[in-house]
Image (tube, rainbow, N blue to C red; front, side, top):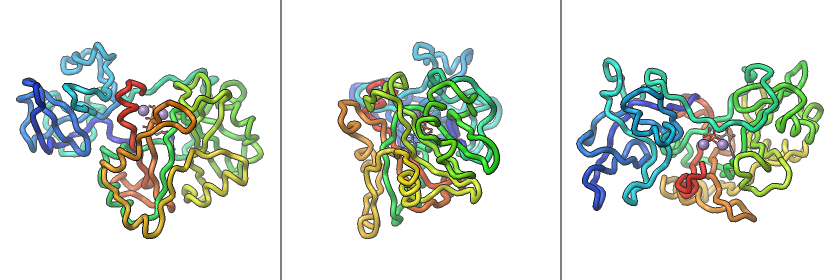
Length: 333
Ligand code: ATP
Ligand code: MN
Ligand code: MN
């Protein structure tokens, strides 16, 4: 599911901020966001922009973000964490749609995407048989907490490289992709990984592996690698249209000589039944460093051991991310 970057939401709660006359702290879904005083009362509808919204140039309501290149980022205002942006629904043309409606297109907002370093050129569209890599932010989908409660689950470290997908069709040659495109065979760091792991022959036909390509020159190389490497987080079987569950995923990668993203926790049985699935607890788990480095980790990704559809996520698989607030605040994202 394409996550809702900009949507109609409700101001659930408002409270003053000590020492601040013109701003208030608001609660929208699971987010704390600073708003202008007088713009909202509790229960009001608002237009909520998630972090990484890139606002359009030339709209009056977006001008205040010009100094920050129109990108919505995590900020700390008067000591209060502010994540996202809540604006009055009066910025919308016409009638106010119902809560939950995605209004990114009417407002001309796009998601900020960091540029991929020298990917080597586009060969064509991303293969339709394989789901794109995308993770919803927990704070925007609190319903997933009820969906994972009681189930065995696992937690992986979110790596901060670049998303890659390798797909071996039932017939035909390997397809190597960046987040959104199939890439021209040959040059570039993505195809270099295909060669390193001999994916052309190693991948069984019909399978796709998806992983984070990390290394020198990619984002900030927070793992401190000396050479690029690939860390798999999903294996997809296009014949069944399903992702492998945790055990099969681990076994598949071991069998084919692939590395996985770090698995931080596998929580089963009684521990899973009594686990604290609260937002605060997850925010704690998202903190910390990449092992062996002094670099803050970007966060964590949580999934049930066995793939299950998520009603909250519109029927796509249950899986969500929690970004480390220390990482966001350090302006590292
Ligand atoms: P950007 O890199 O554009 O800022 P992002 O990393 O915030 O994007 P999201 O869609 O927010 O992208 O998060 C999902 C992405 O996280 C996936 O596309 C994948 O590339 C990456 N990722 C890194 N580590 C993991 C992991 N352990 N499990 C799943 N996805 C991961
Ligand atoms: Mn990323
Ligand atoms: Mn991001």
